[in-house]
Length: 612
Image 1 (cartoon, one colour):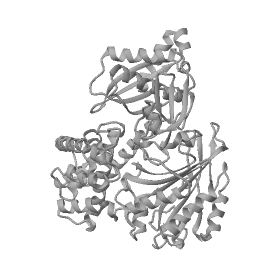
Image 2 (cartoon, one colour):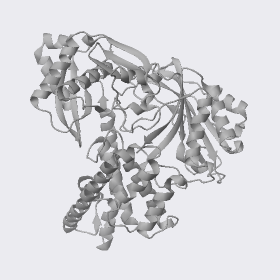
Image 3 (cartoon, one colour):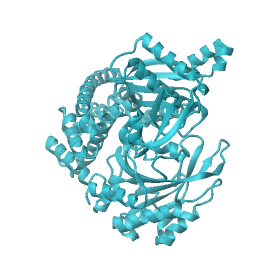
Image 4 (cartoon, one colour):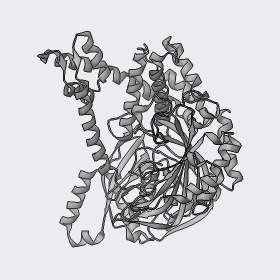
């Protein structure tokens, strides 16, 4: 089965089951600070999973670009990728467990022709808060899966959410293919990492709400969120166990063999081959995204930089020292533009940014060698400490492998265990920092985030009126304290322009305009002058929110009912975030506080500046 055939088969199957196909969204979540990248097809659907009515109905399906970095150190084995595509289908308050399991089984067995005796599933084992999922267990049993292939697993393995500290969540049932490898132990099950079972499908049953006191209560609207690993299914449906052994990677692997003179199936080089082809595909898609992310030292840009530099390091492992990233990226662009035309549209940008980062990293290597030699001069013995090796990596971007290689050349050794301790400590600090930085998200639809979401609509229109109609939103990020809004503009705003935008936003707010939501076709919305982040992501029917007669925008919500609920708007910063893209950071303060105490306003302004 080809990649095209699999994609078409999946979408057409769910269309016959009354699902509406929706477009895939950007790799960068909009208005959701809880994650850096879209890690699942459900991210763009959060408002609808929380109860907002979707214009395309209660049954949806699509193919979504996704990116996950949590398992980046596992990339190169048979099952892990950084960038991947996820086949998805959703029930928003419609069918639930029984029909979901029937659809899953029918597609796998009758459409993809998987042997039902190779299908193994897991369900939630229950705990002190939520009972075990006997309903899902019995549905699998009744449909024909033998009891010895149904496993009860705990919350670590068979539970999703909530996305924040509270909100929708629930058990899931995961589907695996048995590879016929020997069991690693008598109690071997799909939670093992031995490779006997490969996960391909996950059905999440959102049936509970986690409350602030830690208890769980049933949801009024029960949803199903399905995610299917496209690359895994494609390989397995063609009798291959590795996600790299399919047509998606054939051309890029051949190009790499041509450039390196090495062979992919040589055990010595295979892991580096896999990391390179995965990472160059990931970098190409991030650079080719609608949101125009570029390498940097923060947020998505930092991840992109790390992926590019890791690619370069593994290129050196297979003997390639010249600049080849652009040549490799062109293979990805040519292979994927049939599905993602934006890669062709942004081809020049992608190639230019890769070339710039490649040159910058080469300078980093030179600096790292200089710093390595300085540290070597300080040594009193033959051991380079873990702290020193990590400093070279963290401060100067000098990879550990380079430090080890140069140390060996000088008959020195590196305290690798000490390096790993420093690395793990750094990861833990970063994780805790991220938990604070990215707390909330659209899953926390509280009054503050709703007010700020509405404010972005007003800000968008004000920017267009002050700076010109060529200004369009390129992304936004909202938490309870502030909004961050990215927009297309090719120069720094003047102080007068910033003040004019701020004044206009506050004028709209003080005008007490009603906010109206209407459902209509995309064509009608455009004819009425409604603007949207990306037209391609919307279905045939859309929601249009109007702020009085001031602005009209396609959006999923949620919003306040009247601008008078918003408060006072203040811009804290205007800066560049990418070529041709500017960023505004701003917050709202309740009018009563301004009127009652100017000092309190100043204090909140300073507090928000620190948080940004």
